[in-house]
Amino acid sequence: MRAYVPGLCLILGLAASLGLSACRGADAPQPTPGGAPTAIARPPAFDVQSVPSPAGPGSLEPNVTVSERGLLVSWVERQDKLATLKFAERTADGWTATKTVASGDNWFVSHADVPTVLRMRDGTLVANWLVETDASIEAYNLMLSYSKDDGATWARPFTPHNDKTTTQHGFASFYELPGTFGLVWLDGRAQELDTTSPEGGAMSIRSATFNSAWTQTSDTAVDLRVCECCSTTVAVTSDGPITAFRDRSDKDVRDIAVSRLDGKAWTAGQIVHNDGWAIPACPVNGPMLSARDRSAAISWFTVKDEQGHAFAAFSPDAGRSWGAPIQLDESAALGYVDVELLDDGAALASWVEARPQQAPEVRLRRIDASGARGAFVTIGGSNGARPTGSPRFARFGDQVLLAWTESAPPAGGAPEGVLYVKTAATRVPRVTAIQ
Image (cartoon, rainbow, N blue to C red; front, side, top):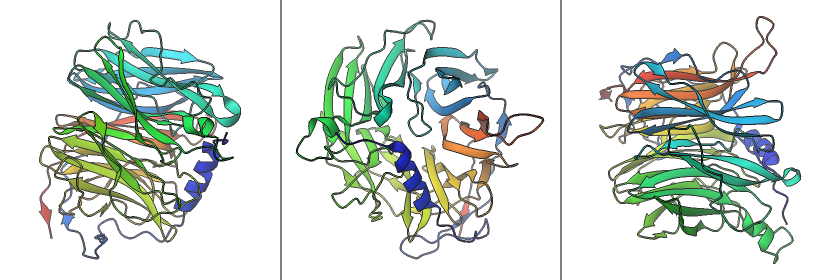
């Protein structure tokens, strides 16, 4: 069986993304891949305000989801070996009381593989976390649970996978259809079950569904050869769910691909843009999707000529085709992207900007399908604090909630490197693009 080593993937991927060049000015237009300069948008009519986080010291792995009730942020808190998954919801009156989903001293905790807590349309809460099965090869199982009493009690945990291999099962993304809960995840079963090669088989992405009684109704492969430890993402269009992931060719080209659920079967993976990024190990840097009706937006990270960049693109036809990539960063990026479509067809996109000789910054800007970009705003990473992991945000109406992890600098006797989940809020900007 192949020894799966996400830590090595992270080191190699991060090293590849750190070929930095001097930063250009914040208002400099960025070229599209075709060479034409993108439009500049008027300064965005929005202001990001820090809000007190419901998470305490030692918190990490934030995620943000949206439901008909509003916005929900989840995170993991660590105390020695004990890990606890918690969440709170953001209302007009502020944060609800923090609630606990589950805890354990045998969890696999990683900035790359983040749990989710989602409130479904009927009010049911569903969550996932990861339990180690062999720490020496970083193998773990994906655990699911649900609560029908607003988080007071949770069902006995279960897995969507039934292969019983000691391999990786994680990087889950949730979606909901009428009467159905679905998810996709990275699945390493072939690394143990495929004995035709000394290295084992390839990582795959799989999908499962559950009905309203939480009986599993499907378990199927989406793609049988994908990147080993880049996060997945799912969005639901009016044509059905689409998922995006980092593909992996037989020559280790790891570009972003999209698959659509066409009836009961997932379509073959379609490359969003031919970046041609060949890298021998996983860069731990997955894509993000957002959808509204038949419109979709995607963001991702890639490296060319030893320079990392974050991009976004739009689809008018539920992920069947994609427009030209729009560069998000000013000069260079570490990636760790997110994206949210807006009602006017534009999108908000976030990424981590790489800054030579300075700490990286979490940034946010408005973009639209024409290539117009609003001026960026800095969300996190200022004042010497270093952002860690993948910042996340979600939108409810015109409200936007952002969450990220910072490694705080020592101050006032505080120990160096203490992690905190930070939160901020803004309202959807309304911007007029100019050429």
